[in-house]
Length: 597
Image: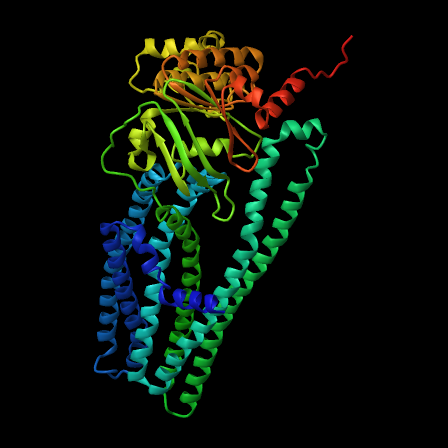
């Protein structure tokens, strides 16, 4: 209950999104936004005066006598002046409002991009790219629409309502009181309509997200579905679509109810005002001509109230992208020093009593301590889920440790600038992403300043020259989005070529050969041997030859703790987890689908 009441109060206090938009705008954009609201308020004041002036204008015209000190010709000049000034105000208000909207559309995307570039790598969870894409294309446009088209009409309508109510007191206190009472009544109707609208949004959004996820899943898993004969009848997608259809109908019904409620409320207020004016006319309190004029004004007044409710509901479309933007802009950036530190042990990686969990209550690794000496090959082995990849992520400072210290080059990663830390590391992972560019450009990412000859040398060591030879266009051939024109093994070769070209003193190699065919594996392992001559290599490996040749093997058990450290021969001789893993893999290598004769 407390949360709900707080939400209502926050909404009521920021119905124009003044505080909501403020952090998203530059100083110039905020100034433009505030000027647009002031001009919208002035526009509403002029409109309110104009609507009220209709009453004395008609009264003076019909009676032939001055009304409120002016003849009907005088009131026509007043109306003309109000129309001209109002047109000028509308022009400037629209211009300034669009400037505020363009400030968001043009500059907020850059701010988000700068923030994304400074976030720790571990922040980029699955699904974030799709969310970010929707935010930058659709969400920011909704924010611009809110600034340019929704808040100003709300201010204008509110100002018109107040001015008409105040001026009505000078004409008839009974009419002024009736208009005053109608304002809180319409506000209550607005609250109810908004509740219905938000209910519809809360019903539809989860099913829309689920349907989008199932569509992506259906596309990505086509090979599996076709092999299973399920491509034409994928039950999760069908269920998600049906659930979305049900929620869409419910959302439509709630939206219709919200619009009906606001329209009914406005029309009811108009009817009450017309009945009141008619009774005052019959009683002689209000002149017949003024009564007729007020009936027309009451109808217009009701339309203004209805437009205010519609604008207030339209403003709500900007609140969701504001929340998404705030999530990114307020995300904690890992602190780092202003200047690079001194590396006391270049090429060395060490973990000292390191514990970490992606969630505080569920640690992944516990009290991990070991050192990968400079110039050596250190293999990290252990069962799936033991936290091997997590160790690499901590070394690259995807996240900060929960406790303990990770040192790269002899210096705590927290005491290094991002540029200094990344300059020491080259990373090769299982999932390789290639940009929709040429083969040569994808390799050059490892070192943008490298010459063409250096690119070719690194590519040759990784076996990429064979790929270039078969592709139409050779080194200038496009690899397609995500590298889809290359096989998984070939993409892995390109990734290794990047690492070779970078010539970083430390290479993190995460199970990159576990799923390769023999040809691609041979190329990758040859490149690994080349890298071993000049770099410290940490490798998470399942291949027996890689493990056997390691200078040091660190064994992680299924609790995320280091249980053994040593060479292959030492660990085999001592028994334990490593020996069990080794013998299990030996047996697996000898296993065959066909019997032996």
